[in-house]
Amino acid sequence: MKSSLVGQAVILAALALLPAAGEAIYFRDKISWRSAIAPSEMVTVEKAREWGDTAIWVDARPEDEFASDHVPGAISLNEDRWNELLPQFLAAWTPRKKIIVYCSSLSCNASREVARRLRKEAQLSDVFVLEGGWEAWVKTNR
Amino acid sequence: MGENEQMKQTSNAQRPTPNVERPEHSTLGVELSALGVWRFLWRILDFVLAGIFIYAGALKAIDPVQFASDIDNYKLLPWPVSVAIAFYLPWLEIFCALGLVFRFLYRGALSILTASIVVFTLATIAAKVRGLDITCGCFGHASQHWSFPSHLATNLAILAGLLALLFKATFRNRLQNVV
Image (cartoon, rainbow over all chains, first blue to last red; front, side, top):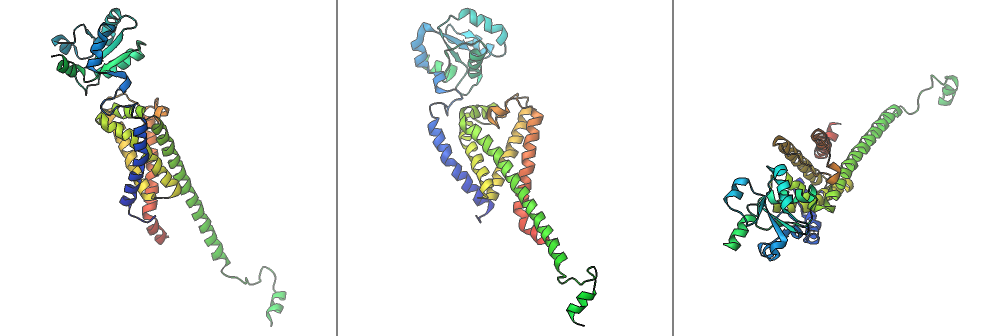
């Protein structure tokens, strides 16, 4: 086809949009556009409060932020002191309890990483990440 | 003396060759077959590179969730952009690779693939410089355990192939005029 290089590139770029859009629709339940965590692994503040005592809270923020304030009953478990803090967390956790991990805000990654490590390294299930993190909890509870 | 009589008296070695242009014809024939071999080799390169990008694109298109996570690991882009790229880039690679196979929008396909491999390579180097220990995600899980040097060498080999094809496609007419 005789057309300019840029013209050819634009046509190809436009053609690729069609299957990409189809795939985005097909995978809409498996990936969130707002956060790197799958919708099934996230929990809202309202839902987490409904769980009450059947859930245990994990604060994935740095220690100084945890010391300053945290969700009542939350246990500090961050990646900086993972090996020290994990046994303390496991001592407090009981089977069948859901685990809710949070960090500072919607854009932070610490809760996602801690949740991933709890699933992978500690072999725990029912691990959820709090949507909106500490900011969302403060907004809802104060 | 008639031509027939002269031919009878002349030995085979001394007999004049009726077609004096034959040597030139055979040179041309050799040149044409050499040109054919080169064309064949260029087409092989087309198919090899297209195969690589179709394979890489298909692996990523099958699992866009994993690919979005791989892009996010580079810590260069916000998450929604990583998701958009995860859905779009594999298909762009596949379409461009098909362009190489069928010689459809050929130069556009080559330029997009060249630009994308340059970006991948720079992102990989940037991640290494920043000390990020991440999988590139270029070939889905197939490239999970690639070391940085093998990853870089693969990218540079692909880039060299693409640049050669792009150079040939762009300057083909000028080269033919020179020959």
